[in-house]
Length: 82
Length: 255
Image 1 (cartoon, rainbow over the protein chains, first blue to last red):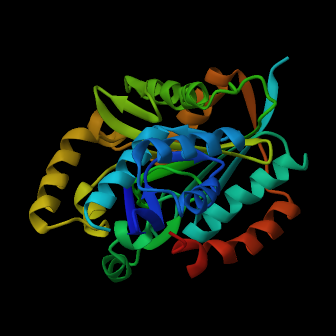
Image 2: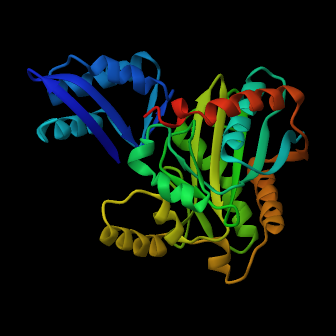
């Protein structure tokens, strides 16, 4: 399960925290992922692409969850008014 | 020629030392100071561990933990929250050079290979255990073992838990749940989805018998010989330093 806490301003990600019981190697890539996503528009495709590109660039591995799943959770957190 | 790995039984120590020693062994292995290693250990006092990416305050009822004398700690590995009962469970870790051909490069396949030691060990006790992807071991569809892996510094580091006895009531007292009604449902569901060695066999299996079977299982599954060994001074000193990190607020509440 992925949980996302998010604040946005003018349709852009202002701050977010991704937590959950997934696996990502190397683990500290999560902090970089959160940094990279800040400032992006709250737009599912763009978020998913950014996550995928970062994981690829760092030779990382997501286990049990795909970039699109994280993107979808971010969108849901956005819809809840975050 | 059968490969020789080091076997460590480090007994029962606290959560912070347990996780510190795992990282210290991984570091020592990466520097070539120690051979590939399998370690068995227990948790004293009992503790709840959360996955690297979980939020401590989101997952754990810390007041309940304090009142029951249970520690809480963040693991270096991902995955979910686990209750490590002093009497109810055994934990193992495997620390092996990533270049060792016994371990597949693919993370998902390597879970299967490394968990096969547990599967065979449990079968030696008469338990028809099976690996269930991604990282569980089940008996007739009910979970008996959860496992988690990380790869750092060229070392594959997998640890996991084997339930000797299980009491979901205690586990869900320590975890945060949305409401009492949902707590009851989660406990009921866990009693159906989770089993234990003593529960399945209907007899008490002691830690000595369990450890002997699992050690045998790892030797057969991985085709290695496990040689009883000791931690080296480097590991002990590093573990004592790392224990400070694992006991810190900064680490445990970082997410």
